Image (tube, rainbow, N blue to C red; front, side):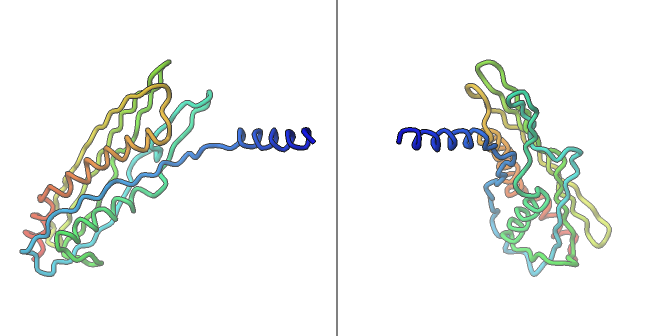
Length: 192
């Protein structure tokens, strides 16, 4: 009777030990929305995204003697494009094809450098995002947002620790984008 109980339990523990942890990070920054601009009158803009990073990894971590590559759960181009669309809609712009001004949001850099020592880990996340505004009249403006986030903790860095560090850096950028009016000012000046 005891053998019938112990064997399935041992098998369950063995299988649980074989389960691998996910190598994806749930990148999901908080979206900060700007105030609506009452002076806008039916201006349509188009928005697209690009990821120009050479390496699409968000972090590389040494776990049990193996270098593990951690990637985002969503395509960063579309994630940041969605953020920008929500912000520009909140300002009062209409988003659609053939806009008076084309916006492109570009991921230049987003990487969490993870180092682990005997008793502590250190995560430094660097984020660099640009928005290029191109008007139909030929005028162009580029605005770049940068953020660095650093966190330290005991023992080893979990995927959650790394995800939180990446999201914190992105939260800073998204908040700065909401507060900055330079792209909106460019659109208003060149949308005629």
